[in-house]
Length: 181
Image: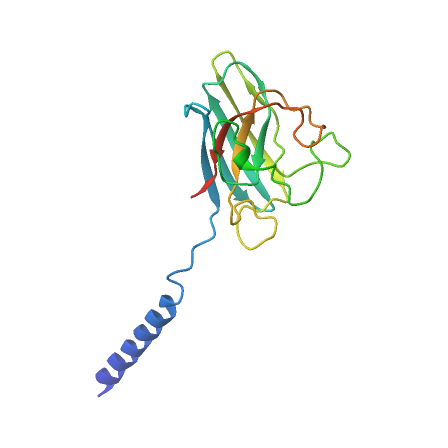
């Protein structure tokens, strides 16, 4: 009789676990990282970006391969769309704090403002940068990966770090949609 009671108790416990798990089957986990392949107007891969949650910040790694030597403005944009040729579909810079553009602007900076990307003679450039107080995903109003996503955009010229809204960084020449991982 003791064995039957033990088996019955185990069956009830397992049934209870199955019932409680079924309620979360459709719930997606909050991503802790995202990745983008950044392509030019012609569809050629020019750079990659990786973004990850890191405490009370979002860390971004940007790596270019195939750009002409020079200095380029780079920004995280508020919409996860990259329709060529102008990539205007990526919207404005990610700016949940409603500030002006640039680290040198007394009313700045956007959370999506990134350092300039310096590309050497070999067509390569890279950096890692922490976006302080950024949230990658979740229910927070300032989450980067919100309902309409986000993109990383490379501009034709260097960012002057002060002129609103985009640092006089010129045309958008490459764009990549950040996809959660």
